[in-house]
Length: 228
Image (cartoon, rainbow, N blue to C red; front, side, top):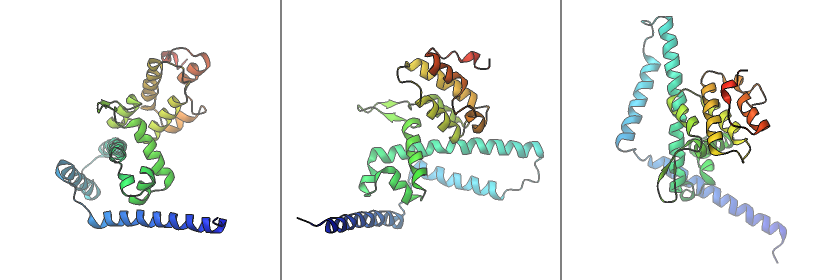
């Protein structure tokens, strides 16, 4: 019978070996620096070029209103970028890339590849799970779990924080509510979020008036009277 200290030492050795193998896989990936092919590579080159231009381009010829307009347009594009993350994370999960590289799930892979904190990586994976496109077991494309939120984020009309508040709020609704009711409530929250700061959306116990009515009375999303 193996003594407890020996078991602990064996477990520590296995854990260390797993981590070393994982890091070796990541470092090998970095060293290879595989080129991104085709249209995706061209898009990345163009993105780099545009950012370089925005960083160095002169703003002298713009008046105050035009500078503000640039800020608004830039924010809209910044808000759209998480939807690209959703696509990439979904693709990695479908390919089983984390398993191939001996990572502890896709979030574990992201923490070393990018690198980011574990909490941030897990939040990204969760967001991709509910806001990214899906595929059925028969291979048919499916809309995101929260399609209205995903569409607004793709359009740049809501931020990543807005999206998280909406999906968390809708996810907390009673499970017995029918799909149409939940979808209608989501659309209402998205519409409201497009004109509010995230802090405005969370002031009332992180539950907006429309969904408080749903949870308290279990009735349909009569959100037209949400401003009463």
